[in-house]
Length: 61
Image (cartoon, rainbow, N blue to C red; front, side, top):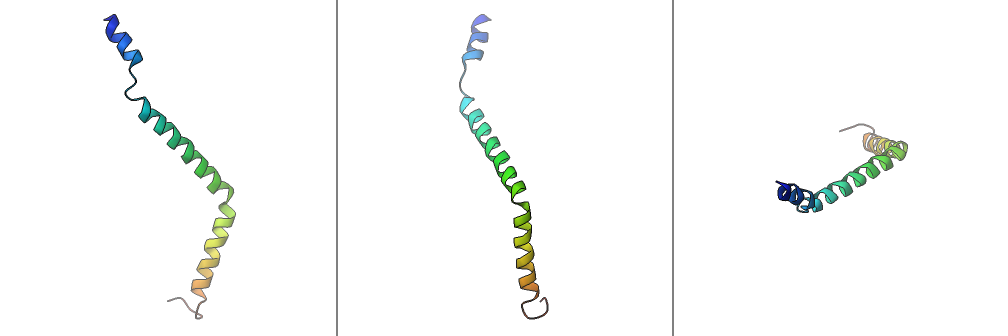
């Protein structure tokens, strides 16, 4: 029983996947933070593109 417990604590098989998951989580948080900071500029860009398409020939197609 003690050998099984010791083997369970020293097992490193899933360690790589956990590290990838943590890195992916940090990247996701960073992306959300950047999008939150640039929200106004992104909305302005989409609005200008929409206006340019709408006012191309005076009417939307």
